[in-house]
Length: 468
Image: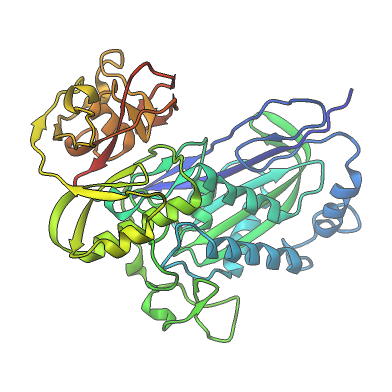
């Protein structure tokens, strides 16, 4: 029996300023039958022998009549058509991010990035490089063999990691934004939509006997895309949230095109990058949990948070209940009526202002020991967590869940897991009681493994927020 399966693999680069860290993450889904595709992180493909039409069409584009790679002068590393569709798809995907981006820049094609991509693709190495370029460029890799795949397939696969990524809102950045990914990898997505990465250049190469993690692929189609200025800086969100084009760099002169900051200089392919002050090379932390509400509700809730942050004149810590989703934020205006009306999802939405105490906790202190979980909803004390709770015995200081934690979880270890405090620093956190979940999903974030748990008997839950 012949397998007709496709493997899809990708890699991306994540930077921890100022050092370079290359991440290579892959997810392998099991073969359900001999006709199903295998997905591995993003883009690799293996198929049966009946694939010659698709592969030959690719080979004809990138090989000469003698079956050899043509010289660089005689034939480009990528066709004009592939180049255009890759660029167009990048801009289309960047224009439709959710929540909306206020500073997303229009991306253009860069010949120097294309040349550097070609140089790397010609080496047929399934790893990031060259090392001397990685501090200054972003890079996504994709490979497949067998069934024909257009290069846009890999770009779309990179973007599709958005399903596992949770955008860090400003109130969650303290001061560094948590990196929240509940899947195997999200850094291909964040590089594609990194607001200041306004140049891209890609190359495609047919690699014979390419080594993909120990497996030799006889004829692999290898896609390399380089980006500049590089993205994936730890500690930063990929873009600023807000109305499209409302926070474009001054160099764009107020130009906006399809929700993207656009410089109308008469060319669609070449212009200077945005000002460097829009991006700094600083350090970010890692993941935090999973969102369970829909995209529409996410957008509505985020709109309200922005509204709250721009409208009330007293700096108070509020416990705000919206559609059974509770958040803690700093608000600054006098009327919430408009925001509450916008956020209305069901009757009786409201908010309360609560004065809370401050208490110290140790690494083993659990949510149910600090929160009363009485109705109407009450706020838990503000908690001061000590340093180095990550090293605490996980049997004595359990962490159950991701983003929303069982009340049997250690508050301080959950705070490290959620990325709202640094393990080596500790600090203050706000804890908010929420309704229990039927299923808590475990994950590995910020050096801590959290547990999965189904149908906990009678338990409540809580969320953790940074103190701004």
